[in-house]
Image 1 (cartoon, one colour):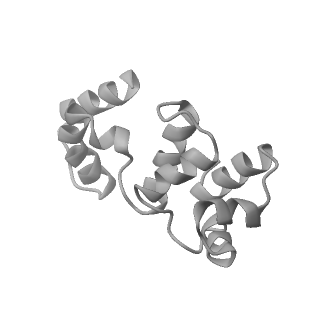
Image 2: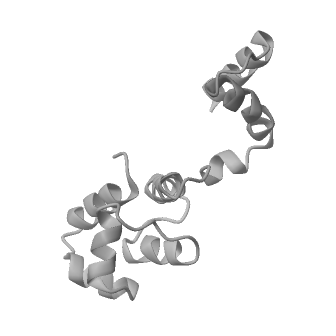
Length: 120
């Protein structure tokens, strides 16, 4: 799954929960929830995102909840929580961004970043 909406839709369907029932369980308007599932509205942030986890009966630190939070952050244009909490990786991200933007980067620094990412 590449998007928050598609991922939630798959989780919801696997639990055989209708869009209307799910959105009402979240306290959301079904039309607005549908737009979120289709990627027309940005995913929620905490604490609303925690409500999604609760309604979907996801273990708070389980892989499905982590993926839900990761995709929500990415779809909002943010770095995922796991990246933000890794100080070593955060310190190396400027090298990655410079590389992506086409600026020259010290090869040793880039190799160090690649090593850090592969350990994850």
